[in-house]
Structures are given as structure tokens and as C-alpha cells.
Image (cartoon, rainbow, N blue to C red; front, side, top):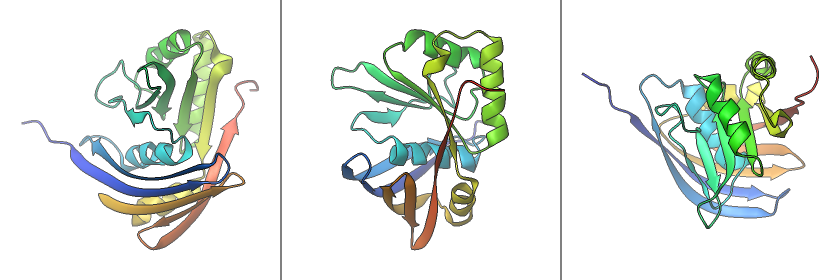
Length: 186
């Protein structure tokens, strides 16, 4: 018998002072039975760090050819491909870099070693447009705090200012940010 996905939701109040984005949105994502909590929390954090009206779930956990999240413009054109952690098949990200020449391709991680391993593996595959990949690392303190206080239904009030995230998660104040990892280097 197949296990069913869990419905997880965040009621998000976002004030991204850096980008001038102020929005309230209810976000519902399906967490597959074999999907780690960290993965679904990173998917929710993508709505905070990369919010755009066209951001949506991409079914990447269950469909190998799809990203974890996508951003599409008003015409339906893909503008941003977002991977959460290393994809199960590296070919998926290599194809995304080849196809998404004019858009953004983002890989977001909660673990530095995983991010560096992905960078090394992409180089060994000689991926085209690799310089367009944005490798993002979320602060471990933020993720650990969310794993500690997170639940299937949360209310988040998020403020981003000068690159720092201040997040009220159901009354628990968390702080963190993201670090961009350069594609060049060891």
C-alpha cells in the first residue's frame, strides 16, 4: 500500500525590504512520506527568499524531470528553476542549465558539504551555462530552529533587511540568512 503525502502549509506575511516585496500568502505544499523535513522547510524558505507572483511547486521530489519549485512569468514562460538540495539525478540540473539560458537556475542547500559536492559533480559533467547557477546556502541556525519549532501548519512573519532574515514562526523568533557560494574555486 502506498503512503499518502502530508499537507503542509504556511501562512506567510513577507516584508522583503531589500527587494521592495510586501505580500501575504497562504502556501500549501505536499510533503511526500520519504521527503525529509529539512527539504520541505527549504521549499517553504524559497517562497521567502525568492518570492515572485509566479512561484509555484514544481513536483521535483516525485517527478524526476521537474524542479522542486518554478517561477513563471505571466505568459507561462519559465523564468527560474529551483532545486532544493542535490537532485536525485544530476542530469536534471544539467538539462535545466542547458535549457534555461535566459532564466535563473538556483540550487539551495542547508548543508555546505552537499553544495560543494554538487558544484564538483556539475563540473565533472561539463554542464553548459554552469556560471548561471546560483548556489545558495541557508544558515544552519535558521534551519535547526525551524526543525525544532516547525509543524504541518505554521504562521510565518518574515522580514528581510540588509540580507538578514528575521522570522517569527508561531511566536518563536528565528534569525538567519543565505550565503551565495561561488561556482569557481575548489
